[in-house]
Image 1 (cartoon, rainbow over the protein chains, first blue to last red):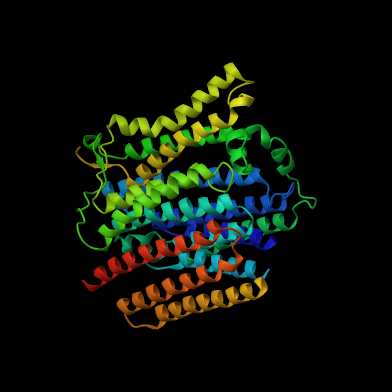
Image 2 (cartoon, chains in turn cyan, purple, blue):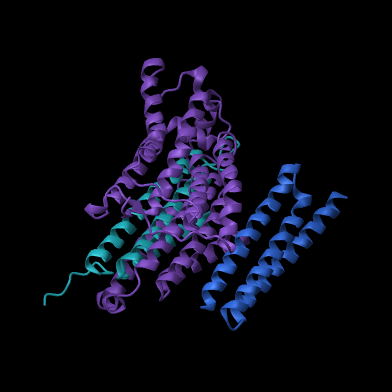
Amino acid sequence: MTIYGLLGAALVALGLYGLVVQAAVLRKILAFNLLGAGVFLLFGVVARRGAAAGLAADPVPQAMVITGLVVAFAATALAIAMALRMHQITGAATLAEPADE
Amino acid sequence: MILDALIAGLVLVAAGWTLAARDAFAAVIGFVCFGLLLTLAWARLGAVDVALTEAAIGAGATGILLLFAVVRLRGGTEEVAAATPSPPQRIAAGLLAAAIGIALALAVMLLPDPAPSLAAPAMAELPAFGLGNPVAAVLMGYRGLDTLLESVVLVFAVLAIWSMAPDRRWGGVPGPRFPRAEHGPLSLMARLLPPIGIVIGIHLAWAGADAPGGKFQGGTVLAAMWLLAWVAGLAQAPAIASRRLRLVLVAGPLVFLAVGLAGMLVADGFLAYPPAFAKPLIVLIEAAMTLSVAAALALLIAGPPERAA
Amino acid sequence: MSMLLQLLGLLVIAAGAACFALGTIGLLRFPDTLSRLHALTKADSLGLGLVALGLLPFAESLGEALLPFLAWGLVLLSGATTAQLIAERARR
């Protein structure tokens, strides 16, 4: 299962790069979700390697990932609501400081 | 092995597309594809419950959320271009990301070889809960506190989203008014799919005790069916001041908390189940939680109130 | 006998995969949205039906055998609806 571990590491790298480099808030949120998915995959690899007692994967990391997925969705929903509100109030689509006139 | 390499390759391509796409809409579609391909990866890793959750919440619910947002966040290309970092900054960010990725890859290669596992202790205590699904036992039994807190987090997230509304809209109705679809494909699907979907959602939540599934997956399907009827104009969003809505939202965490506190009186401690009643109590909690998770997810996607009640 | 049936099932699944491939080629090569939608919806619906058919020899119980067909029915419904909605939008 090293392939999925390497995939998780690659997703973390891609997500981090996107989070730093993308200017638009929505794209940052997308990159943040990629980062989260990579971290969850790393958990999944640990779960798969812990397969024992007749199970295909260790159930404890699986439960943690399920909890993480739900909480990540709640966080994404809040982030999007904040981005929409910011756009509504200031018309901005990025987090850049407005230039002093 | 080839299948795993293929799936990993496709996931990587989808992730790259999400980052590199010029148009935000294309990026969101790429992200939904990424989520669905990731579901295959989870199935290959033997984590079927996680695969179901990823398909339902990671790809589906997040996809709906992002699509709602991308439609409203159009424009601002010059501002985005101005705020984009310069090439040297991008190279520095790329090097940082690559360094972290390589460090994680090394950590993956160097994981301890007789891999530590909690599967045996988890399975040993399984009969005490009367559950057949070890992941459900971990969620409701061994890590019950995590699940309780997670359900409270969902309620807090809904409150935080509601607080994004302008003051004068507090207590109003979320979302735009969707025109009622009387004819056409959307109307057909919104009348045909919800009954089937509700049965599937309840089945997923019920079957989670002994097979992959559970309240989060089932609750998401229920929320999606309501959202479908809402978007087709066949169901109206309730005002957020509605007492019934708030009751449904907190019913799950409250029942969970009540059973946990009762455990201090009747059994060993907080969130301990008395041995004879473990299964019925867990089923009670799951039923209340399925409703609350469905309500919370639907409200998270519907967003802050935009119209007066 | 069951070996033969499973081999047949694999052939049918391969045919379904070929349908998906054809649909994707149509998506990439057709000139405009409407023809792409047409290729995608038709080919994917047929492909999924063939895959569901090909899985029959591998099922262990009646419920397991019928579940892919339920999935196929739902995909037909949602696929057709989505294609119609996108086409309506694309025509404007």
